Every structure is written in C-alpha cells, then in structure tokens.
Image 1 (tube, rainbow, N blue to C red):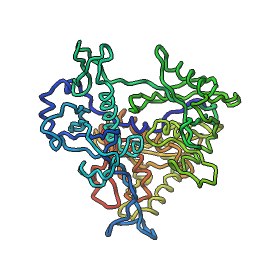
Image 2 (image 1 turned 30 degrees about the horizontal axis):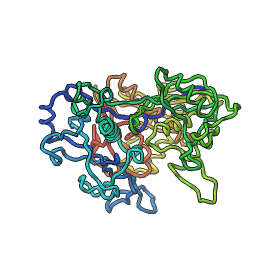
Image 3 (image 1 turned 30 degrees about the vertical axis):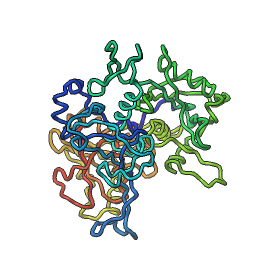
Image 4 (image 1 turned 120 degrees about the vertical axis):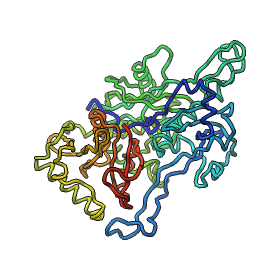
Length: 498
C-alpha cells in the first residue's frame, strides 16, 4: 500500500461560499440586502453561538420506534451555528462588519460582539439552547455551510484585528471592500487577508504502520500526524521532507498530495500529504518540540477510532491512543489511512453490475432482510432485484477481489433528478470508509450522467443515524418527500444539488 485518498472532505472544507468580488465593491447592493442578511457573530475570543449536538433525545409520544425495541430510541442532533438578522444589529452594514458571501439566496456577514469571558447561554443570539463555543472544539459537528461560514468569519476578523497598521510605513489602516482588504492612511497601500501555507503529512511504512507524534504541550496519549510551516522560497514537497526530518529525524519518499483545509488559528491553510518512511530507522524527536514519536499499527488506530474522541481510561491505567478531533484535517487523514485494507488484500474496484450473479443477489437479499428487521412494512422502500432491473436504474458493485463489500445505485426520476438506492456496506467492512467511497462514486457518476439534483430516502430510527451523518457530510439536507414518496415519520427525505 503506497497510495490512498481521503475518504471524505475535511470538516472545514466540505462547502464553499459564493465569493463575489463585484458584490464586495457594491455598497448600494450591500445596503439593499442588509435587512434580510444573516450575521455570524464572534466574541473577543473567537467563539460563536452554537447549539451543541445532542444529547440524544427520546422519541416523543406518537413517534414510531424500531419494531421490537425494549425502550424508546435515542436520536442525536447535529450542531448548529446561530446567526442573527442584520436588521436586528443595525440599520445598515456596520463599518467593522465583513461580507462573507452569498449562498442559496442568503447574504452572510460577520461581526464582533462583546461577551464576558464566562460564556453562558447565548440567548441574545436568538436561541436559548446556544452556547459560546470555538470552531476547534465543535467544527467537526457542524454542517458544511455552518463550518464554512464560521471558518471564513474567524479568518477575516482575526486578520483585521492584527492588521491595523501598514506593514510598509506603519500608518493606521482602514477596512475596505466590505472587509476583504485594508488601505493605509499615509500612502493608500492596500493589503489583503494573509494566509500562511503549512504542510501536514501522514507518514506510513507503505504497509500497516503509521508514524504519530505528540507535541510537548499535549497530554500523554494524544498523538497526531506531523505538520509545519512552509518557508520562504520552499516548495511544498521540500517542506514535507524538511519538517519530517527536523521533527523526528527520518527521511521520507513518495510524497503525495491528499487535500487541503482552512485552519484560521490564526490564518493557516493546511495542505495535506502522505509519504513513506522506513520504520527500522531510529526516531529522534526534536527536543522541546516533540515529546514522543512512535510507529502505530493500523489495528491500534482502528481501535482508537472506534472509541471515539478524547476517551480516557482511569488515572491508574496507561492512557490509550487519543487521536485529533473531528475539526482537524489530521482526523480525516488518519481515518482515510485506517480505511485502507490491510497489506496483502486485493485492491478495490467499482463496476457496473448487470445483477445476474448469485453473489450480488445474496448481498441484496441480506439488505432486504435487514431493512425488514428494522423498518415497519409500510415504510420499507429498499428495492429488490426486479425493482432494480429496470432501464432507469444503474447499479454499481464495489469488489475486493471477488468479494462484494458495498453496493449503490442511481434511479433516474427525470432528466435532471436522480435518487440514490441500494446503498449497503458489508457488515464486516463498516467504519472503514467504504460507504464514503461508494457515495462519492455515485455523486461523480450522477454529474457525469447530467443530473443536477440527487435525493434519497433513509430511516428516521437510530439504526440509520450513521447513514444520515454520512449524507449530511456530503451536503444532503432534509427537504421533504420527493417523487412518489409521502410524509412518513419513519422516513427522512434528503436532497442536494450537484
């Protein structure tokens, strides 16, 4: 194993805002849209009003639970960024507010507000359940748009806080272009928001071990991949090689790019790579910077991922492996590497399946049986073989060797709208990124086939919570029934544009 890709977009890189430069230069339009605009508010410590995820709620009276359940089922809720109406803050855009962008017809701004250090209920933000929370703490639990809004707001407002004087002549600067530049008073020099490139690299042995390290300021047991800033005149690949050598004393090869994520603490762009190193070479952690570094087997990483974030044993026991939280691209990199089959397994491939083989028939029969066990008969919408063998359905199978590990299908509803069907991962391969790979394949195929909208139906029970979380990470939102579906408390109907 020398290559792999990210199994999902990083938490702070899964949505984009409409960044319209003409809008930034149009104060009249900014004033016209202010009354209906939404404002992301940050306190002086960079926290925003957020409704935290959960705790899981019990089903309300009248809700249908899973057949045979001994107790009411619990459903976790996603974190939600609370924005304010522009008109509630001021009659026009304040001088120190910044224009974030426009998405789906809504204009978004950001502004600082005063708030005491003791962050209690953020009811003044319009929601009594909100708390003042940081992006680093909660970013992995936010939806794509909320994460993009908060990331951009923090990056812009932090830059303004630190750029009040001109770097050329030291004169005061003022905000311009709705917050996207600053102009100095002496010579009208214009400066733009700074972004510092940094590499972050997952070093592995080409097989089943990954190199993880702990900064000196981190608690025992907390390990992550290695990172560092790009120096002047340095390429990204050269930076990877230099930083790994400086921090742990090993040389790397086969440096490959994975993806990127904004990290506004205060103004970094994390550029993710993976590279190969020899685990037999002694490690030399940089004194004062790296407290420990060690090679970790894929099995131990998967066990740590299964425990969840920041789970600790008692003080009398050795600390388990603690991995980065969901806000960081480091978490996505580690999850992606952990999802690769152990060395020696055959590579995966995804094929268009004609649904004639006995293996796929058995795989789908297990899917139907599983849905019958958790869903009332009137709410079961999984298609059987005859329902899939129709012209409007295209069916794909993911194979490892000759073994089916996942399936997925697209059903054309009209020329621009398709439905995701038959998404299933082999029970033994769950939590390994298989479903993400299949869903991303379906999204790519839907675009190639000319569809502009993709919808799906899934269950509302706790059994389907991982599936709903997967779809939410990929931009699907609840929009109500579509096609021939009817309102059903046992179903959730999700849609996204592509």
